[in-house]
Length: 318
Image 1 (spheres, rainbow, N blue to C red):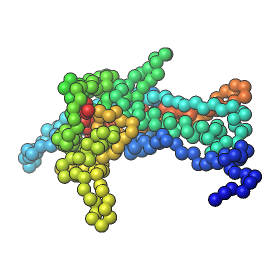
Image 2 (tube, rainbow, N blue to C red):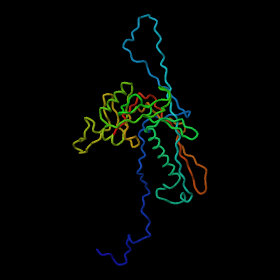
Image 3 (cartoon, rainbow, N blue to C red):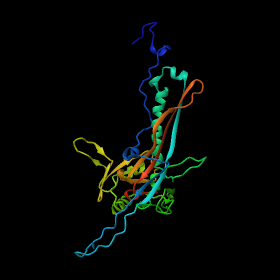
Image 4 (cartoon, helix red, strand yellow):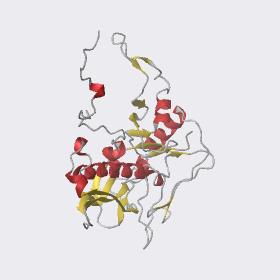
């Protein structure tokens, strides 16, 4: 069909307003499954301590004579564990001209930048807690650091050749002063997973969540009895993922994590670990310099592992 003479066509007009959606889509994911799953608490000092207590070993010979004067049992004294708080921040700065301008989605404003920095800071916390780092008391020139989760896990762990457990500053007390040593990487198998689950249960734990990266999550979906299959014949939905592993020691939810190291799978009882805050996340205006506004979003926190026997670590996975 011919276009009438002198018809103004859109592709030739240079003064049309751009069609840019005011809905801003972030590619970067903001979910933090580990942080969201565990408890939240309060720290009172930069060196945060707590007590771990174990009961007497169960006995099948607790028989006493009627009328006898009973012996005194050893006291159930606890051991003091600890971690250092870590101070983290993000800073946003926006010029007065930028703030006054009309923009798409208003992402350029200081208010929106503070929100985005808060989300980014929460992701930093997630990655730190799932990393492989010992605690550090800091100094005049070195920041304090909170130990990561696997730096507490010494007992229920499966490691590759050459891998070594983390250590505490007081042998069996104190804070993690050395992170675990990485060993030779090997394939993630159901046998490795089941062995750590058994160890957790034998030592009194009841793990509920297993955090793992993309590769290990796909591997876990191939464990025995959970191969690719049709969920229901009538809906023709192909299900290739396993989200809950039913073990001999209870159900464990398999949680994919973007922020855990690919070589680690950590198995957690969320009731036995928490993020404790010396300073909750907050935002404060910084000194104004010239034609701009500057805001700092900051948090001071530490990871509290109430009892490392409640958790497990399948390490050194390829």
